Length: 458
Image (cartoon, rainbow, N blue to C red):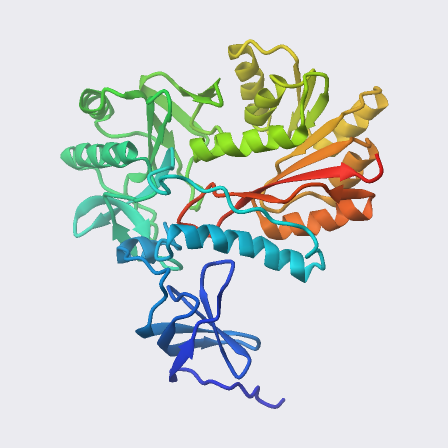
């Protein structure tokens, strides 16, 4: 077979002009039409690069020297970019918001849906220190227990005390807990030999309640010096109301194991979202960015146009965050979720907030929709907030078979959103308002969207 002839070769150094950014935030340069992807390079920049990896359709190069920089470039700390915590932090925030809007427009164009409008991305006033949950690996570095992160695409550990996009109080608690674990000379996990004690630290903090949860994840069944460690953490951090020990003995990338024991305080914390109270346990799925989540949900409720008379189905209800928000503006809300613990949490959260117009069920949304349809339930609005893989074709079929006037789609992956919009359009629905991007994860390439889909001619 003839060897593929490419316009560049490995280890070649050349000067390129950056034309665009990929959905992963890599700069794109083209050499005789062949794309090279370059970390940390921005559109409009002229860069000397070294070719590192070549494929049939594209390659990767490393930036060696900048000859011309973009006006949108901002100064950064290398450690954040290295670890992938904040892959867009070298791009000014207004340019990040424009990038996320363009990302969706480009996908629509590829799908021949460029007639659809995309509104400007809703950003944050302070686009950092927003994460209300941290899960950080613990490793031994030069004989000392450290917290940090791994360099992107590697097992190289970078020690950190300031994680930039996390709530600053969470960073402080992490450092305090690290120092207490050092005091009792606990060893850190070694993934190669599957030895050592402490694997991860997880910290959650209520944005409004200010309550803090600390979870120490160990490889071992026992946490050495547990009573003393608990006493010291609770004394040093009065805002820690929940201290837990989680055991994960498996050789896995999954952070939490199935066994959790309470060391001090209570088993959960609570926080507010859009004026509602939610109980949050170690395993609860709870939105990471509280202020932007409120904007996301308010946008979804506004697009649903609820007046208090509607019947709503929430097809991926989780612990009930959006179901409860909608219940205050609707007549009846039906929530369905495949995870039994999430439904137990949703029912409890409804009770905590004294909301009685909700019904929650465990199972697949498709089968419950068929059951509800057979029972004569006619939803005015169906709400979908699926995981990154988007909706299944069977769910789209089940949802449209119920013939709701409106479907409100909250998406965390523009690629699967665009694919699903094509299916809805093929089934007699239309996108009825500009797609609204919301920046849930500033400094990263992720973007959430809210889309209003309505029945054609109804």
